[in-house]
Amino acid sequence: MYLIVDITTNFTTLTLFKSFDKKSQIKTTKYPTVLNYDLALKKLSKKLETLIPKKQKVKATAISVVGIVDYKNNLLEYSAYLDKYTRKDLPKFLKDILDCPATMIQDSSADGLAELDNLAKGVDNYSLITVTYGIGGVHIERTKDEVIVFPTELGHIIVVPNGRQCPCGQRGCVEAYIGGESLKDRFLKSVSEIDDMRIWEEAVEYLAIATVNLLMSFPSDTMIYSGDSISTVPYLRRKIRDEVDKRLTLTKMPNVKISRLGRKANTSGALKMLELKEDDIKLTIMN
Image 1 (tube, rainbow, N blue to C red):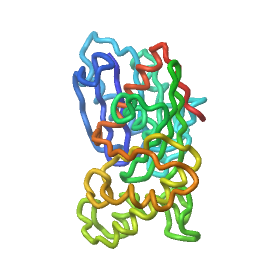
Image 2 (cartoon, rainbow, N blue to C red):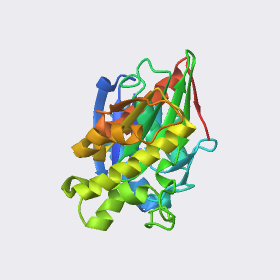
Image 3 (cartoon, rainbow, N blue to C red):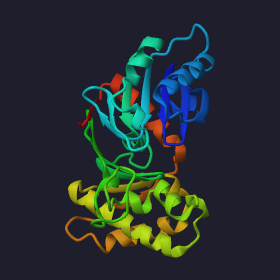
């Protein structure tokens, strides 16, 4: 069995799989993310007691988490949303109680790996942007025997000098203008409740600017958008390609696709990471 722990700003989801096939899901449980780290460990331990069948062995576990991951030390380096988790050895905690390897991955990178056999099937290089409570980005390249992941902190590129305060502490980040949490703070509404088109007209412009920045660093055959905002706001889906196309001049326009994995993307991608680690294909995540 394989255990996937997906920790987001709002919820923590634990999912048990019999194999690397996403359809082999055995059991899952979801609960509000506990922001106090010590209390979070107690909650996690109790949930695992009921989730994992007695006398059953977990072969490996992966943790998808929002923030910057130090892949060399297998730790969460920084997170604007999970600051109490930073530099805490959650993988070791799970390794000790489950007696199996435990590996951490950035949530956007997990989303990217989830598309390897979906929208990016047969594609040698592609980029992905997540538009949810925050903004994330990743570029992935693959050859016959290797998958290389380039994590980015796309949400924290500056698009407006001395602009709006971002949860990360900087001013003018793209996340401060189109991240779900930032929009909620500004307009006191969730993304699905915002119906003022002027807000989305501004948002799609900043999303296009972020996309061009990513593509200038990593020219891609395919550009994938994922996340709740893309799923729930038709205007973003309709307009984003045109907004990118009219700004992109120094590199080719990629194929634009919209992910259908939804909130299962983090879990699916973390499971894919474990599969690649056991496969003959080398997985390299750049630190």
